[in-house]
Image (cartoon, rainbow, N blue to C red; front, side, top):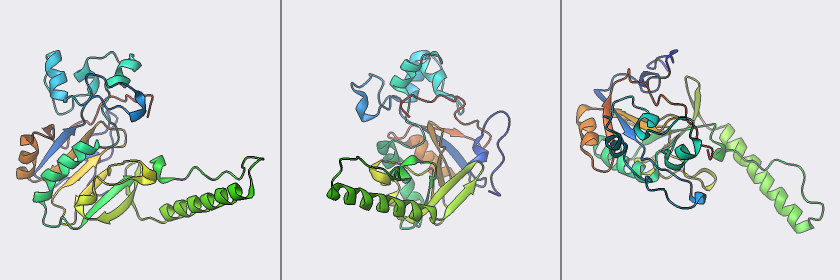
Length: 254
């Protein structure tokens, strides 16, 4: 908290989430066109890079550009936005793997890393606390229900005692493990990437804001150069004063 700046009236800037002190910072764009598996046919823009969309419109990518500006879609066209919105609040798995591959050589402690996941993610919490069940349930079904409810309550109790990291307007569960675990979190069977993660030697930090469509990395100048040169991770260099994801678009399926 001591290395973060408060949010201001003009919206959150990177300095409110990423600590100062790193040589350079980069923004990682989440590919356009994320679609949950249940939403049917794939849109032609699925997986497209922001730079490609920007070129189609004749605009340049800037450190604080928003997806509405890149896509050219009317903010009121909810259906069109739902079709090609990037994945929000977490890195897509493929992008997470590619980013981790770039980060791994730039730490001396890949065997120990720290991961923060937002405690408000519903996947962490049980929904099975109802005390009722079907009137026609037999003894076996009732016993199974009770066992599932007890397991769910135990899960909630475990999460309730998990260490937290507090930031401005955010509280995160804190986990420790090897760097290779960064893209393997699956609370309740659902994929989730960490909202904050860093190696034990603090050589770099990665953050994905709860409401954001991009991920940000702070680290050494050579690390940011690696990111900017990567063919698998689309990035642009930013500063701590960069305004983060300026639009508040929320897809209906979130």
